[in-house]
Length: 242
Image (cartoon, rainbow, N blue to C red; front, side):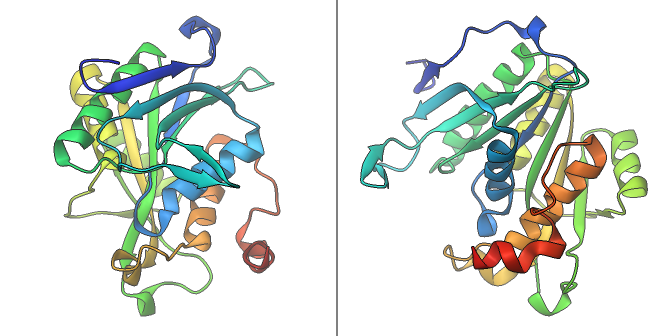
């Protein structure tokens, strides 16, 4: 247990030099679980391997039940090694957000240090941008971008047709980790938020697969990830049925 109340469970021996030009993609639980579903989908499609788990005393006090098996709420880092040796990827998600602002800072600071130790060059955080449901494009939700680097932001705005976030606050680890990584270690980060109906802000049972898949399609385009065609907007109806 660390002084921050975080227990680290390592699954593999760590050697940062074994990873090629690594980036980090993270998506924590949040509005409509847009970012988390996108990361969970990537984990499955890439067959990502467990790297580290983190059990934290500021996560909800309860056990998660899955097929009658109990487990503690945790954050986790997984990794994918590119078979073409161009760019390896670390994936970060969690079962829950911390319960307090101090807890969010503690876990975000801790994960930021791990990201730095892994010699990651870029952090991409995924999440939701709540708007009035009547304003959402029925075919392709818009993606809003903000970044810790003006040039990186300009690149995404131009090449990916993203929208700028003029003012606002990105609450939770999705916004805090890229910000802390820049402030502490000068690592660049970008936050990509897909439109979702703002009713999800008051109904935790709502998920938005279309928003998550819109983010996955952008990642596939920007970083040439081997994302299967079935995880695309044109197949959203089939995914929803399953």
